[in-house]
Length: 389
Image (cartoon, rainbow, N blue to C red; front, side):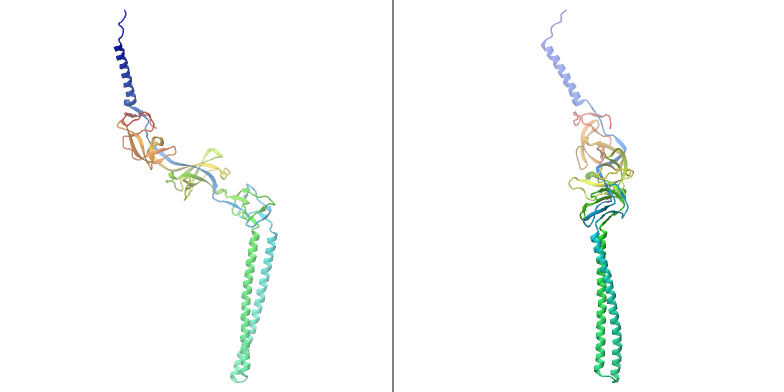
C-alpha cells in the first residue's frame, strides 16, 4: 500500500528541526560544554638555574717579548713546553750592549780610583792644616810675650787660614768624587739591566701555547714572541642575561660542558662576578672554575656551556611562560579555573626555571591556572582541570 506523499510543509519542519538540533549541538560544543584543560600543579624541590654561553680563558696568561729590539740568536722553548719561573726562553744578539756594559764597568773602576785620590789629597790637606794650626798657636803665644813681631804672628795666622781652606776644598773634592762614583755605578747598573733584557725569561711557571718568531728573525721592541699560560688558572668566562643574574653569588655550584667533549658534564663553581655589564648586549660576565675537568682537556678560547644553580624552590606552582600574556616586571595575565568557570586574572610571578616556567606568587586557594591554549576559551565558560603538568 502506498503511503501518502510527504507535504512540503512537513519537509520544511523536518529540515528546521534538524537545523535546530545542529545549532543546539554547536552551541553546546562551542559555548556550553565544559572544557577539560591542563592546569599547573604544585611541585617540590625545583632547582633555579641560569644558562650562559662562554669561552675557556685563563686567569694568568701572558703575551710577552723583548723590551729591546734585536736578532734572535737562541730559542729555548716552543709550543707545548712546560717551563719554570725564570727559565730562559730566548736570547737576542747582545754583543754591542755587552761592550757598553764593560765600558761602564771601567767607568766605575775609574771613579773608585778618583775617590781614593781625592781622599788622599784631603788627608794631606788635613795634616798640613793641623801643622799650620800648631805653628799659629805658638806664634800667637810668642807675640803675647813680646818675643816676635806682629807681622810674624799675622803671617802664621794667614797660613793656618789658607791650610784650612785647602782642607775644605779637599773634603769637597772627596764628596764630588763619591758622587761621580755613584753616577758611574748607576750607569753601569743601567747598562747591565739593558744587557739582561737581551734574555727573555718566563715570568711564571706555565705552558707555552704559542711562539711567534723563529731563529734569526728580528724581534721588535715589545713584539710578542711567546704566549704563556698557567694551566692551574683555567676558568670559564660565561655571559649571562643581566635580567636574570640578580640571585647569582660567589660559590654557587655550576655545570660545565666543553664543546670538544659534548657528551660529558663537569662540575664547577662561581669564583668571580663581573662588576660591569655589557652595555650593548646587556650581559654580565661570570667566571666559573671547572673542578673536575681533565688537565689536558682545556683549549684556550674553546666554547663552553655553563648552567649555574642559584637556588631551589621547595614547594611551588609553576606556569610555562607561553601561558602568560603580557609578562612585564613580574606581572602577567593568565586563564584561571575558579568555581568551574574560566576567568582572566593578573598574577605576580617570581623566579624562572631553566625550561621557561615561572613561580606563581599570589594564586588564591582553590583556583587552578590553565597551562595550555585552547581556541574555545572564553571568560565565563565552564571548565574542568584535566591532565596536569
